[in-house]
Image (cartoon, rainbow, N blue to C red):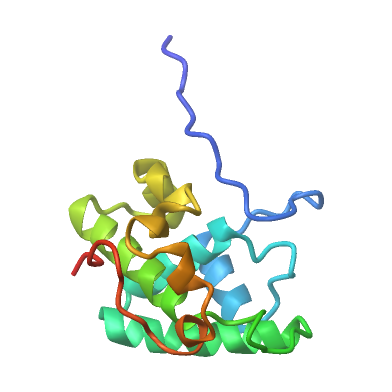
Length: 154
């Protein structure tokens, strides 16, 4: 008998309570603003980005994700400022990277997608496109700034 080979589950934030979000559960938790601050990790951002790009064209995905992040941040009590909170350029850049990876090799779920595209788990991937100097500016946080290193995938 052949043993089943299980893909490792990509953990979503603080999993001490054993809760794993399916894509449907994550979509609902994001929109209902019930994701905890501990669950709102880089992996959760990527999975939510994937959930948006598989449903909407990139610009609409960006608009909807922006609104959702701002609502979730407010629910977490985060006061938007030049130093913390929503980051326009990074949100768009990650959505563009997720969308390009999805076009190159689609997957049926966000977890399967991240298994196919582990490079997206590297938080510094965006530094191929943007210098740290650009990303440290209030301008890049407030509005979409063009990459200064390599163009984002289209």
